[in-house]
Length: 282
Image (cartoon, rainbow, N blue to C red; front, side, top):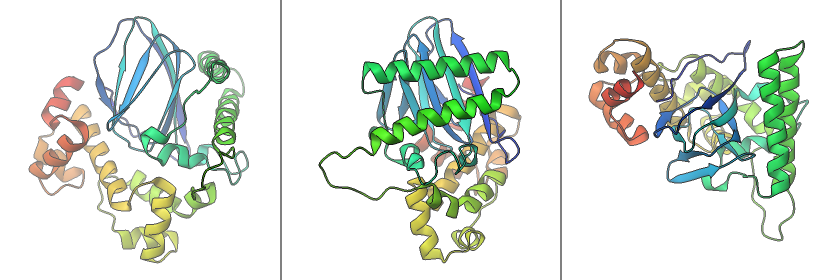
């Protein structure tokens, strides 16, 4: 069971981690308070999002949207992984100005990019090894080095994704679209227990309700209501793992009407009850 922490903020917009699973692991549920990119350095690993299974070996990777529930599993001994969880501002407009990188994290899981060739796998693996080295050594400027390596990977993915394919084109959200709804993202991230209305979120972004709903879906791939629900569920999962509160108390503190309301939504998204989630996590 992957633990969840609300650790990201404007002052600390990313966190990185790497580690080795010495033995195969059972399937575990996890969720993060930012977008995530993970890279397999060795072994075999899979991530399941809804009904889509992303399985790979060295040089393969996965992308996750903010607060996107998923299952993960390492399938062989000595599987080594590195991951970056980040808020959108970690990338910065000056690095990927007007790029389509947010769409890669918000489109349907089966449409997200993968390492499609041995050359691509080698490039991704090299970046993963750079990230691991910077995390381990933490030399002067290591955070900037991580950001640049990470941006290089995203830039490569967007270049490949935007190559003409001979087929029709479809509108994709750009960094500027995400920027327009960033106040709403920040409000949910900062107060996942509050039931922020669409009207409140639209007002914070300086948009009409209709404009906001359209732009928010373009930027995140979700309605605001579904994104807000993800935030409530993520905070409930956090409380289940870090407190001894009853299910009813957790529900009250994470924006749900009562324990049964939390239970229904939790089972639908996590495929387990709040009690089972807490038990597995412990």
